[in-house]
Image (cartoon, rainbow, N blue to C red; front, side, top):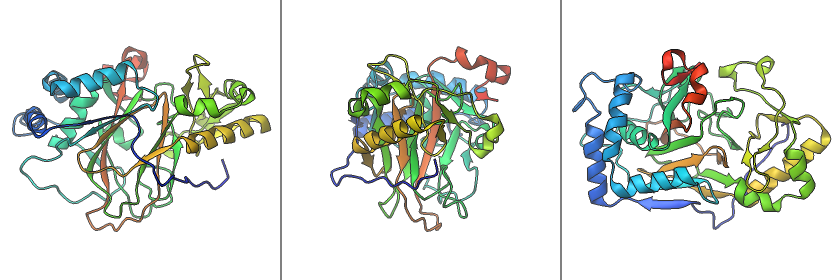
Length: 336
């Protein structure tokens, strides 16, 4: 889309969806689980080693019961907002947090408490996966501002990040996206924005619903995955049950093929903005977005690149691991 957009947030914008805040006892229990997977308890383990992932899967059954219950319920039905917010999760144990990375393609290779926490949590929503062309296929990725990438429509940018379904162009896109705040934005300007098709659908006209349900849209991949020559075939933006559809759109990368489709997509974006919620993630917040029901984005902010900028970990999960087997070389966790 060539238009310039803004995300106008209502003054009362708050977190949407289910919110679960861990107690101190639950936090300590989670630290104990995570430390089984750090060098303290799992010598020489690397996150992208399938042996570490197996150990994380086994350790994940020890998560606090209330956390397990919340994750299982969300997996069954993500609710009207398609977002689960888990608060007060540990991100460090005894060691101080290092400065926020500020390099392109930043990832976590060695298991930390934070990386172990998000991985064990996301394993209760499916199998943790990554994409070879995205951050070299790392399972735990850093979402940080990068100097020179300010205007990028990516996790490295700091301008408005348009509402989108994660990796919308890909047949085996994630079912769930987890974002764990390791260091909050000191300016308070960077807000995670989410909006659900379950909230927006009632605002759409019957005609718009019909147009959005037809294959009249193309979604291009980000530069790391290829060029416009590798764009996916024409697709519908709304799929499945007309009364409770899934949504497939990226407002910076999905292109309508005709004027009717363009108007329908604009009406959808307006409905998403009208029903949108926003949240300044604080340290220990894990926001899980159902990538079939909810779009997400981020407001603009101004990084200082001084080691204290906003820092999130990002992990993807698939419900049906078998579905993506054709894309996963050697039956690993990384899609080619």
